Image (cartoon, rainbow, N blue to C red; front, side, top):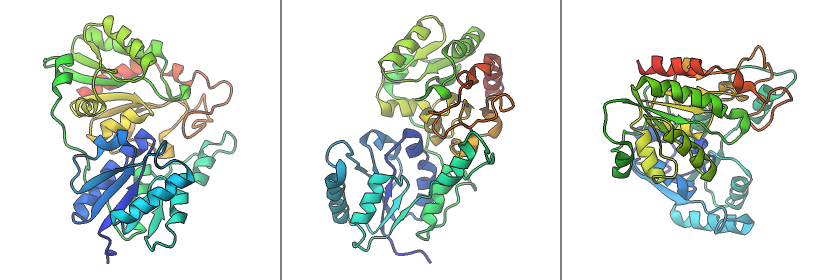
Length: 347
């Protein structure tokens, strides 16, 4: 029997990919329990993820201002009591939310937290005596957290994805009209160990551009990335950079219209997965076994580094740590392999 919770708070405020991975779980919850109200506590930037899901409200987690520090978390706890929350599902489980749990200890609000599997992830990523085996996916960890409240979800029986969105006028004006298939490429990642070398991604773009069969759309952000992508655009006939040209919500709508997305182990891949867009992920010193593979994607569309040559992979969860000699792991992945995978996926 399902506990009589009428209003659940779901906490997940960062990183972008982790927030995006809540979408199939919330869609499955919405289908199974349509009358239960959900409030998502997250950063304002991520609000567009949730706007099309019925009976879901976003409460902004102001971690740098209103809700900063212990006093800010205390203020948040008081605000949540006024929201009428009667259960909390913490899919973040960091220091801030642990403090929040303690502050709500005597409120009689059930507060469940995700098991991040830190011990097994440490065993997978340590450089010596590694236990190399696939771990539970982050999506399933989210599902299991809801289960502790009595809510049974199944995200594998069907695709739980957001609907394709109408292409915004601004994006339409930038990209134009044609019958070519649209290839999204997000060539950057937060850490060097997860970023395919720029000279090689240019080879991929050159090869695709020369076929004259595709429209290649480049994604990125920040002044440095925008400058690089704009230069690539200028040197190709079928390449368009949308970096810093449209709003984030419009960018999401554009992603929902792609035919395929190529990304690193980064947030852009998870954004495409929210809409069921076929993905080709280029992995460096991280690995799908850690549980961060985007939702409902084909395993053979993962392009992996050479594990025989680099047996310590994955060297970290986030791609920020690697031993000497692993600096150029991704340079060993030929650009033609990626091009062939893109073309075969589109065909």
